[in-house]
Length: 157
Image (cartoon, rainbow, N blue to C red; front, side, top):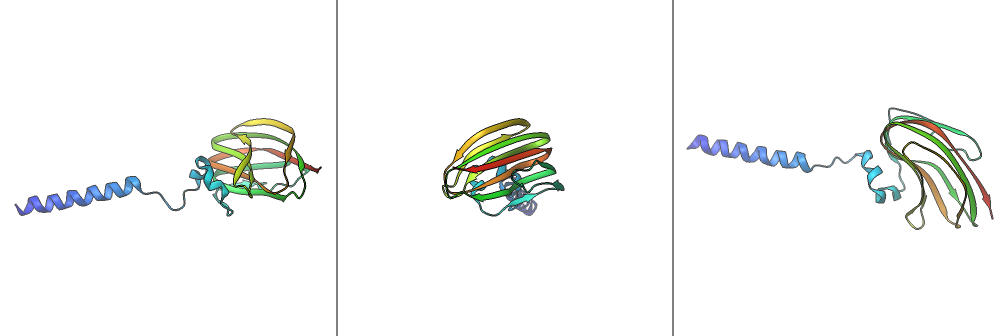
């Protein structure tokens, strides 16, 4: 009888441990940012990667970028437009593994103004008119190995 009680207690503790392990969400899981757009409006970058190159963007310059195992979100360019601004963007991104996207975030309205690139892609936005406010371009990934080029230019109206 005593063995049955000990065995029942051990089974109950194992069941509780399994439930905790199944439903536990790590405090730092930067890859989940890729799938939850609400996390993109946090002002602080939250990312990890094993190697990276060129992840801060210079306007009017061909920016070469590469990263290995990039997960999370990194702000690569911030600008404040006091008047309506016309932007031109081009990119050529090759994602070898994982998921990657580039987004333009409207910070004042907490919304994604534009998904510039999602996955392996090559394109050009010849002109896109932005209202006067603060914006950020952010790289977002989930275990992404990538390389490519990114270019942005701006003209005030």
